[in-house]
Image (cartoon, rainbow, N blue to C red):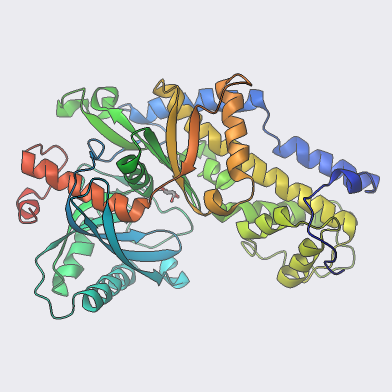
Length: 470
Ligand code: BGC
C-alpha cells in the first residue's frame, strides 16, 4: 500500500461501515471501555477535589499535595544570574539565566545532555556523578578561566519530594520509569552538594523545584492571569498557589494563614490504589503501552480477529511503542491510512489489513481522547477547589505540545465539566507555558534569595550558606 494523492483531512465515517461485523463490534467494545462522558468527568472531578483536600490534611491521602516553599508569584523585578538544572525524564539540561533589570526579561544560555537509559535503573552514585559531569562541563565551557563567585542553582527535580525546606527534598518514590536504588526516602540535595564540593564547583542549591511549580512561576512572570502550572508529558502533574491557612498539615508551623504557598499536587498519584493509575491513563510514557496491550489482548483472547498469520513478536515487547506512534496514526491524512500501514510495518513488522488499520486508528483516537479528557479533570478539580472561575493555565510537556488534538479535546472537556454556556468563551484556558525548568527555576531561586534578604525565612534550611549568595 503506498501513500498517494493529495493530503486530505481524515474522515473515517465513509470507510468505517465497510468493516466486517466482528471488527465493528470490537470498536464498539473499545468505545465502551475508553469513553469518558460528561457525567463521568464530573464524577471524577468531584472525587478529585476531595482527594486534593485530603492531601493537604494532616492525615494525608493518595495525592501528596507537596508544600514547595515557593511563597508567592514573581513581580517582574527579580534580578541576578542563576544556574538551573533540569532533571526531567529524557534529558538533563543545564541553563544559566540572567534576569535583567528590564521587567520580565531574561537572557539564557543552555546545554542539553541525553540522559543515558541505563542511568534510570543504575546506582545513586552514577546518577550524581553524571549530573556533576554535566554541570562541570557547562561551567568549564561557559566560564573558562573565570574566577567565579558562588552561583545559586535552581534544581528542577520532577519527582514527588517532601520538602520541609525549599533547599531540601526527600524523594517519596520514583516515577516515569526511574528506579535508582538508595534514593527513595532520602534527601536528594546533600549528595548533589557533596559531589559539587568534591569537584570544587562554585554552585549552591538555592531551591529544589518541581517542573510544574517552575512552569507556573515562569508563566506568571509574564502573565498575571496564570494561576496553575501543568505538565502533560512523560508524566502528568500540576501546581497551584494555595494560602497557608488552607494547608492543615503545616498548621503546626504557626505561619501567617494569609501567606501564599505553592503546592505541587503530584496528582499523577490520583487513584493510587492502582499505582500511579491517573498518570498511566494520561501521560506520554504510557499511551503507546495502553494501545499495545489492547492489541495484544485481542491477539491472545480473540483468536482470528486481527493480524492473522502475522508475526506479532515485536508487538509483545513491553513499551516498544511510545505516544508518538499514536500521534502519527492520528495524524495520518490518507483515507486508506497508508502512513499508519507503513508505521506498523516499520515499527512492528506487521502488515495490517485496511479494516485492522481502521480499528487501530479508532483505538488510538480513543486512547488519546481519554488522556486529554482525564487531564482536564485535574485542572478542573483545582479550579473547583479554589473557586477559580477564570484563569490561564500554563502547560508544557511533550503530550501537550505534540499530541494531535490534545488541546482541543482538553478544552472541550473543561467546557463540559465547568458548564460554560455555548455562547461563552473558554474561561479557564490551558496555554503553552514559558520555560518552567529553566526560567522558572531561576525565578524561584531569585524569589528565595529575596526572602532570605528580607528575613522571611520560612522553609529555608541552609540560612548561613544562602546569605553568601546575596
Ligand atoms: C512526577 C511529577 C512531575 C510529572 C511531570 C510525574 O511523574 O512525579 O513530579 O511533575 O511527572 O513531569
